[in-house]
Image (spheres, rainbow, N blue to C red):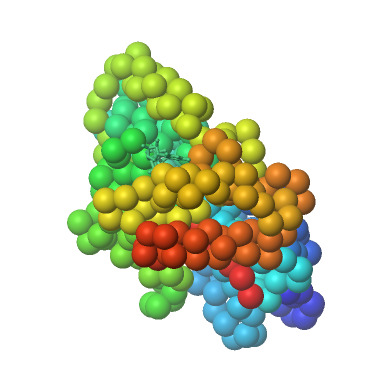
Length: 302
Ligand code: EPU
C-alpha cells in the first residue's frame, strides 16, 4: 500500500516518523518471503498516538512488525502499511537485577549484555532470532523457560484506548506461545527481573543451549522457527517426521531435513508455496493422527 497523499506525508515528517516507500518485506523477515508496502519507522514512542490517529483518520490499515523472525508475509503489493520501532541507543539499561529493555532490542544481544553483567535466567532463548518485543508478545520459550517468567512491567501502546499504558507483570497472562495482549497492542518496552549468576555459569548454560540448537535445528537456513505449536503432550516435529515428510516441497518451500517442524525457504519460495506446504502437512497430520495443528508462525496474508 502506498501513502501518496502529500498531507499525510508532511504530517509523518512533522511527528518524526520516517517513511520508506515500497519496502520489500522479504528483506525484513527471516523466511525471506513477503511482498512490498510502505514502511513507517517510529523514532519516538510518544509519536504513536498521533501516528495511529493519522492512519485511522485516513483509513490506512497497518500492522506492527518486530524482528520478522516468526512471520510469514503474503506476496505482491500488500494492502496495509507496516509500522516498526527504530532501536534506540542504548536499548538496555541495568538497575540492580532489573533490565529496562526497549522492545526493538535484539533478543540475543540483550541476553548476552545481561550475562556480561552477571544477570542470567534467559539462557534458553539464546539463538532465538528476533526482537525483545516480538519475544514478549508471543511469550517466546525454549529449553524449559519462557520470557514471561521474568517480566515485571510492560510499556505498550494500546490501540483500544489509543494511548500508551504500563502494565505490571501480574496483570498479563503468559501461556505457551500465547499472551493476553490484544492483537493490536504494540510492545514498547519491558522491565525484566533477572536472577544474579556469575558470567561463567551463564556462559556454560548458553553454550549447552547453542549446541542443542545447532544439532537439532536448521540454523543456517531461512526459516521462521517452528511452523506449528506442539499440541498438548505431543510434538508436531516428531509427528511430521514419523510421516516421512522431511524434504517434502512446494516450489522452494521445503520441510527441513534437520527438524520437521521447521519449513525452510530453500531459494525463491513464495508465500503461496509456503502456505500450500503448511496446509498439506496439516492435512496429512490430521488424517493420520486426528490432530489439527495450530500455527505457531504468524501469518499476514491479505
Ligand atoms: N523430533 C523428531 N523429528 C524431528 C524433530 C523433532 O523426532 O524432525 C523429536 C525430537 O527427537 C524430540 C521431540 O521430537 O524427541 C521434540 O523435539 P525438540 O526437542 O526439537 O523440540 P520441539 O518440541 O520440536 C520446541 C519448541 C522450539 C524450541 C525447542 C527447544 C515449539 C513448537 N517448539 O521444539 O521452539 O526451540 O522446543 O526448547 O514449541 C519456535 O518456537 O519456533 C521453536 C523452534
